[in-house]
Structures are given as structure tokens and as C-alpha cells.
Length: 207
Image (cartoon, rainbow, N blue to C red; front, side, top):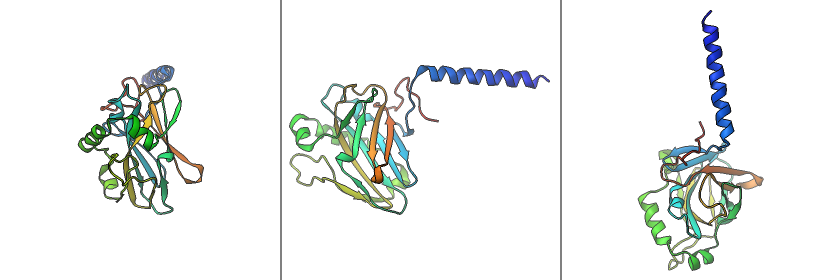
């Protein structure tokens, strides 16, 4: 007979916790995959985003966002270009990927970013790393003429690059969202935070 009051008290406590969490209004990140890397997936495509490099540029005009697009199953290739991606700040303001001429003319830290990404590469796991790597970069050094305007990611392949966005109106504080457009009008939104630990302070991770 005593079990029933205990169960009722437990249920009431869990309800109170859930209500308090909802009252905070904090959104949840996408799956935190490793440290500062977050990911979202469909039945055949996974998008990885690393928030750490953006955290080092809180007052710059542009922010770097490492990304990986992995296709795990058969079907059509996924076209990818800078125009594929949109960044949303915590207030929902959208900014599109920077143009290469604007970036090279107004941003002087690309070499720093390349060194950082070599030292702290985006974490995509062993399975994704074993997929066929698709070469190309949208933002190469200014003295390198091998810039790719777009790539096609076929089945069982992965493409990795560093995207650049103009600093959004809300800066890099709070929840950021990288929206990736897919064929047929679909999209994948990866919600992430810009710090090395991937905690975003008060922002909660998705269970």
C-alpha cells in the first residue's frame, strides 16, 4: 500500500522538474557528438557542425564553421555549395555564406583558422571517416587557384570543409543553427553552440 504514495510523489516530482525546465525557455542542441561537434541526420544523410572555431571570433566580421556532409546510403548524390548553407543566430536572424571575394578582401584570419582546424579537426567518427572523401574547398588561400564552387557528395562518401558566414546580428552567443538545404526542398537544421566544450552554459543538450 505504501508503494502508491511513493509512485505518486515520484511522478509529481518529475512533472515539476519538466515544468521548470520548460519555463526556462532554453532550446536544446542537436546531438552532441564529441566535445564541440553536433550532428543531425536523415535516413541517409548526416550533417556534422563544429562550434569551437566560431567562439574565437566573437568580435570579427566573419566566423568560420567547420562542417561535414556524409551520405551513408544509396540513392542520388547530394549537391553542396556555399549557397546550400544558412546560419541562424539565437534570435532567428539568417545570414548566408560569405562570398569568396568579400571574405578575402575583408578577413585576415584564414591562415589562423586553417591551422586551428588542422590541430582540432571536426570529429565525425570512424565510420564516417571510412567513407570516400570528396575533395574541394570553397574558401582556399588567396594564392591558391583550386577553389571549388560546388561539389557532389555521392552515396557512401563524405565532404568536409570550413564555411564562412558574416557575423549574424545576434553574434555567436546562445543557440546557433546551421541549415543545410537538401534536394526536393528538404533541409537539415543542426543546432549548436560556439564553445570548445559544447555546453553553451545554460543551454541543454538533447537527450
